[in-house]
Each structure stands twice: as C-alpha cells, then as structure tokens.
Image (cartoon, rainbow, N blue to C red; front, side):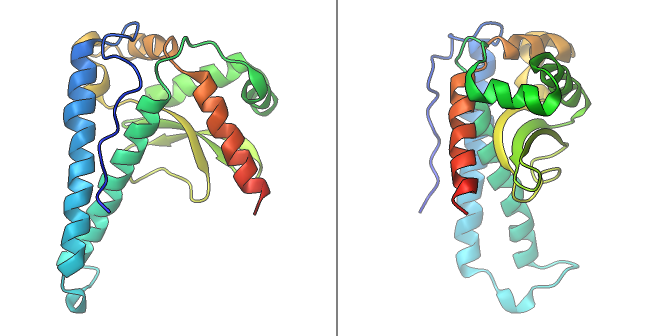
Length: 201
C-alpha cells in the first residue's frame, strides 16, 4: 500500500502568525517529500538483496536506516499539521491530566517551550505507558529521541524550515505564534484514544 500526502484540515492562510508561503513549502514540498521517499524506500525493499546484509554497509542496511527517517518524517509532520488549526485554548481531561503530571498547565507550556528551544528537530508530547504520565521529549532528528511504546499526542517542528521565512532565527516568536494555533480538542481526542488503547492491553 502506497502512503499518500494528507491534506491540511485548514486553509493555508488560516493560521495566525504562520504564513501561507511557509505552509505551502512545509506541507507541499517538505512533508510530501518524506511521504514520497518512504514509498520509494518501501518499493526498494521489495527487491533488495538480503543475502549481503551487514552492519558496515549493505543496500539493505541503507534502505532500513533511511526507512525510519522517512517514516518518522512523515508521521511527525502529520501529527504537527493535524494538531494545528485551533484557537490555542485548552480544556477537558487532557488539560487536567497535564496539570496533574506537570504541576500546572503553565508549567507544561514552560517545559514544552524549553524543549522546543533545545531541540534541533522536534518537541514531542507523548503519553508513556510505563508510568502513565505525559512527557515532553526532545528529538534532534526524526528517528532519534523517540521513546519506544509512548504514544505521541502533539508536536512542535523546530527545524528552521518551519519558521525561518516568517521569523528568521527568532524561534521564540514562532513558538508563541504556533501556540495560538494549536487545536487542543484534537490533541485531547488523541489522548483519549491513547488512554483507551493502553487500557485495553
């Protein structure tokens, strides 16, 4: 099954502080590129010579290594775009859970901002089944920094392509703008689904 580029659920001119030009390049070129590259890798894996696989170099190793980069690039971008388009106002059970795990909503946002400032690639908010808590994880590249078994709920793309056309090197202003556009209802729905899935195990 080939992977397909998901449409944005909002217009490219709909976000406050993130321009149509940035969204066009980010979604239509960069994100779409990861989807296309993942399909190319999956196709290559169908016929690659597995008999020569080894850890120093082989065509199989190269494909499998880049498979995780392309797949995570696709998945994280889909999470990023799917949780935008809201008004930045949080509530409901997710907000209560975050306040419980971080001490307060403001403490969570402070930590998410710090994580996004420290990350070279991504800040990922995820539910960890090993302690039942929500954490902010730092990822420098798509396929490094993820924690096995956690369920990602929300992310901030901190690669420069996400903000440089609008803010230059002013990442803090980009993060402030992004927070005004988070669809916390979508993030809450993801939390509910993750919680239900973990409870069913």
